[in-house]
Amino acid sequence: MQETNVLNDKSEYKKLRDLLLKNGKHRYVEELAELDSEQVRDLLKRIWAIHDHYTTILLASLGGGVKSIQLMLDGKRDTMPVESITHRIKDAESLKVKIATKTLDAMSGRADKKYIGINEGDYHTIITDLIGFRLVCRFPQEWENVDISLRGSDQQPGIFEDNPDKYVRDWTEDNPIKVGTKPFLVEKPKWYYLVSDSTSLKFPIEDDVEAISSDRFDAQHTTLGYRSIHYVVNFEGKYAELQLRTIAEHAWAECEHETVYKSNLPDGDKKDLLSVYAKLYANLIVPITEITKRMYALTKSTEASEENSLHSIVSTLLYVTGNLVENLKLHNRTGVTSRPNNPMESTPNNVAYDANTAAIYHAGDYMKILKHSNT
Picture 1 (tube, rainbow, N blue to C red):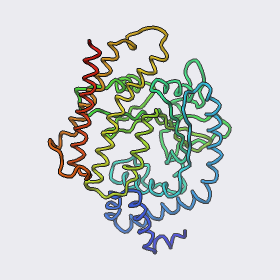
Picture 2 (cartoon, rainbow, N blue to C red; picture 1 turned 90 degrees about the vertical axis):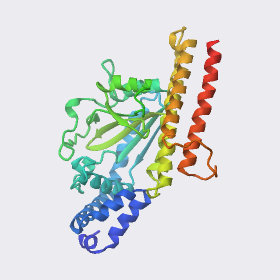
Picture 3 (spheres, rainbow, N blue to C red; picture 1 turned 120 degrees about the horizontal axis):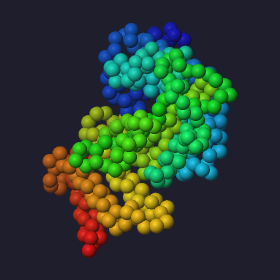
Picture 4 (cartoon, rainbow, N blue to C red; picture 1 turned 180 degrees about the vertical axis):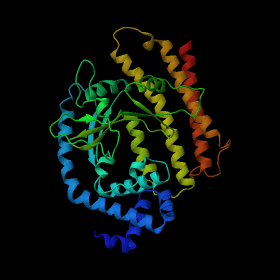
């Protein structure tokens, strides 16, 4: 698109506004409206220049990188315990949304300043997920073997080189293109995990993360429920992001992405409801993760151990019950104590009531199992 068209045609502003609304970015539409005319002109100019460069030049070249990384990952399938490996190349519309939202975030101090002034000459060194891979494993214990396959250990090399000396310090300048060299990590992998609302209940899987993150991972606390390990790789000057998670974590992420992240609902009760449901779902992932850890341990153990003992089963049930009580505390903040008039209507009152009922029901069910196990 010619610069004059961008600067003179007000329809380009409307196109961006409609694109943000379509992707549920209502807050950013409001922030876009608060910019002065010069800021809007500059943002539109850069977004469409990047779009043109991406669709006419860069996009076609990303397929080769995807195939090369896929071949590397496939070569480790015999020793890498993953249930599935999928990939995608970011589409042009998603790229425009990301540039607009990240730029507005940076202008408001919510994101790295590298996004301010992003242009067609440097966007591919700033946006690190133009190529994306997702690796899904079945059990929490399997992530470590996958991690070793990806970046190696003292005993064996990985698919990607992990050398802190090659970590990026300046995202707009530090992007070496070394054709033919081994792909390498450009930052310490980030481990995103849920933080409990309560300080009185410490989740075991959070203890695991705290113990590991100070050395091999950069711990990223989340409150809504997102869980995943992110690796960013430089492959011949292009970036690719790999996400590693369990099936349970993947199920939550897919549901949340489709209903919350991509929701085009305006701020209000319905959007709040989606967030409440997502948080409830995420809290249930915690005991599910703990149970699958126990199941895995039982199948791999060759002798009786504390982890496989009746005492361990009871402690796991106590843990699950405690987590359900956490859900109860979370939703009791609304003060809802009675059944709503119309149970089929989706309102904050109903969500709180249903969440409380589910938590009480399951907590009571597990307490019965506990009593039986202790006899």
